[in-house]
Length: 571
Image (cartoon, rainbow, N blue to C red; front, top):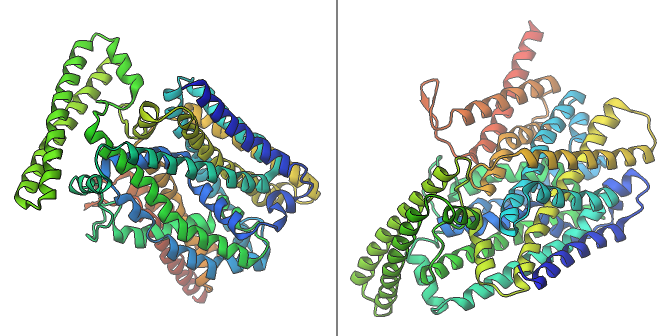
């Protein structure tokens, strides 16, 4: 990075943190610290909700995922508007009526203390781990790209977030997220404009290339439980995930409970429902355009530059040089096939189009085999090396091709996204620990000021735990899928508890408490046997379906246990 890039990056981050501390310092009680004084308007709430969900993983992984897999991930968000409508009609009025600080307070008024505590603990476990991943995921990429030490990068992100989150609480998180969203989307749109302008072909031709190479696969109506992303999983399984995440996860609930009125909170939720899909579409489309760009300009064999530089200095250099030369030859031949494809499309020659497509597919397969061999060399050179490079694709393009200043801005985008989602998580973890555990079961008669200070301390402690977890975490699978998987393991059970509370009025606390344990055990049993057989039944289920299975399991188990309990009482 140039000096201009460093100045842009650090200047942007310092401005956001400084603004958050300056505007919100001095909270004196729980109302102002946890609810932000209840004076947020709908568009601040909407931006805050979007920024909480749009972590650095979104901006690192999503373009890379589109590069490798096309646009089909967009289907994951199809059910979001439906979930926002359901939450606005059902969950929100109840939260406002009870004037709760956290979502889990409702469960005690509906069931009992142990059910509230169980749901709060499930949230703390899931979100506490997620906070570590939210820091670690961008850190491992950023540390590699910037040449920083990984532990230092974890601490750098974590400490920046702790400073303004502990200082100003919910209001600081919401206010800074407005600036962060402006930086994030402004930077991404700018990157998109640059990549489209840098294409050596017309935009319509780029779209033809993307379409013929199966990167514009937006909708798939084939029903397949093993497929993570299709129309049916987006409109069913993902709806359960969104209901749980936005309706019961305190990191999101706290965003809209700070609204000045029920109407403002509802409008904020609906803003998220209407804008999130286009936002995700833009990010995925940028990834597709980067893919098209690399059909005309030779891509690296492996996008993680540190790994390839190590190969250059290793005993495997000669093998690597041979693979690079082979990769270059295949690229040149494939580029000719793409040019022939465009010519065939221009004259509407379907037979020539089919031949060109077939040739392109063969060479793409050959390129992937070369990439696989290169990754095997990397592992032979370093047994601990991480060879998945999907999350490096977008930022490698940024560093190699975008002008000075824009590179720094795009790094600021990634840091801002990491900070925005982590801040919401730490804010919610501190609030839930204080309200649902410390105040309710440990120190029951403290002053408002005491609980406000406690919330600050718990926020800071969770921040340190997240940094510690990030420091000792290991990367698994694509980062965006890792976070969705972690949420799916717990969200279904938590949502099931709330659904029983809202709609199954005849079920009592003991029944739903036992049902929650049984449902969570079932989900973990399915997950750890996925791809194998369980009780003689072959299990192959995409993790998004865990949300629906967990929720329904809680409802079914709770209903059965309540009926059995009634029958035993009668006898």
